[in-house]
Length: 356
Image (tube, rainbow, N blue to C red; front, side, top):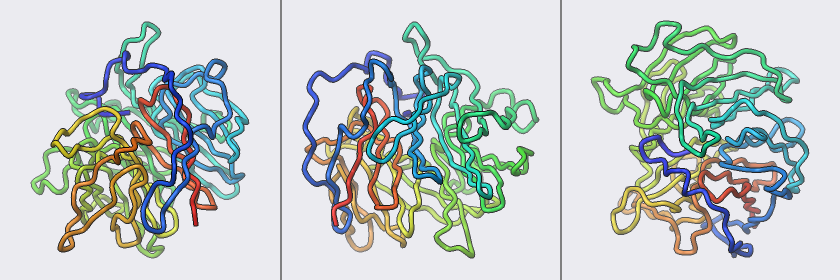
């Protein structure tokens, strides 16, 4: 979902009458893909969709998707697109989904951002929540509201968008639609610290629309956090205890959470600037891919990344408009991608088949 200040009204959600055939190859360099828009084998009449926000793959290879339609918040697919299960009716603002592996067992962290469409078709907002559940949805615990535990002022909103789980089980919550803090809890949900927000002496430490958070374990001896600062069009890197490290600029991209797979980072681009200078235009999303040095190497559905004197140039959606608003990317063991979209005419995730 886009930030609350620029979310379009309910009228933007209309069923597309002109389904397009599968597109030709997209992407750049070694990261090229065949597009399968009709990958998911489901009927929106029987399995209604609003927005498909995030997807993870569990230990059994099942693809678990979180959306914000309370007829079925959670959809479970196999890699052929067959729907295996659907559950969850209590997350009207279902937005962030994280898989936590604890020994031989999988758990889910489900983030309800508190922004939702009511039964009258009107957008409403309330305080968000974060839930830890078993893989089939049984509640383990929910994290406390930061106001209730005394770490937020009365005038600071809490509308979380994402979680991440550290190597020791600590839980990190990104308050991306609220006050833009990163809040750290231990594995049992006890508050440890928070940082980010808007009022740091060094502006590099601030976050603006802290939409996503990810634990980056590419350096096994030195795991770090990747925090999305979407309105600044960048990723910001922090230590696990909240110390700022660096910023990776992504000019033109209003990017969602970083998804780390092997040495690469994948991310949905919810929307991008235009060559005419527009900073918000509907249906301008795609996918971006970074290498192990955090250099952009491919933009499936977007323009080819270009560096001039080491500086990344602005990136835009490609003219063929494969995507509406890329919100998340899930990577399988064959390096195929599954792209969840916000505000995409009630459509299911798109599969991008890696072409070698």
